[in-house]
Image (cartoon, rainbow, N blue to C red; front, side, top):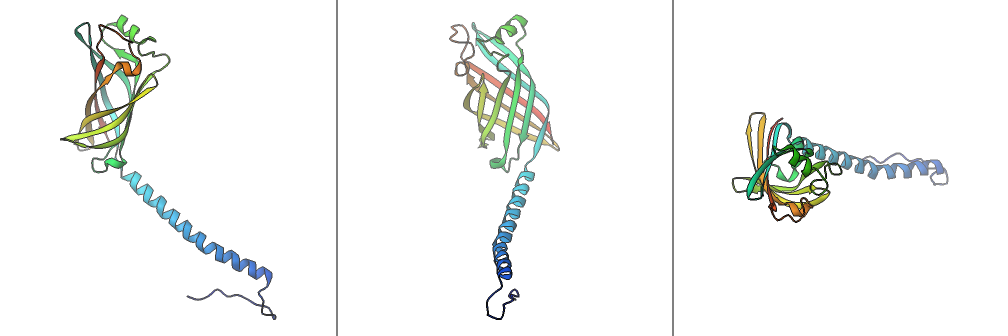
Length: 208
């Protein structure tokens, strides 16, 4: 490799200005290498992110059931909002995040719904959303599952949620259900007539 041209004076010493420029060039060589390495890392990162498939929810159904006085009470939530980055072949880089609006709860009886929104149950005025966010996703049995942070009334518990994922062209269906203990979230207190376990089902129709 050709060496950079450096000028010396009659005494055989490098002039101060040239010496400073030489040091600047020597400093810039490793800096350029770092700059190239940084650009490569950014490129690889953008390739990984762009490889994830973003599914946009089109229709979502969030329902639940719980025992109360010996009877099964069915209900639902609306106001679904989801960010679904999911590739069944890239589970480590996939993520699922969704929420519903507590004030939309519907059990078929308006007076009961209004009671459930109060402070001793969901306290909808203070905690308007129920939030579910994946921590890890993995294959399980004939479908998938994940460890999710489920947050209700600002209390977060980790729950395993199994689900299926089926595609048809540019559309997909996420279908999963899980059980939570309402007492973990301070919903309903120590009721003797209301069951502790709540089964929540989520079905999301999405498209690319």
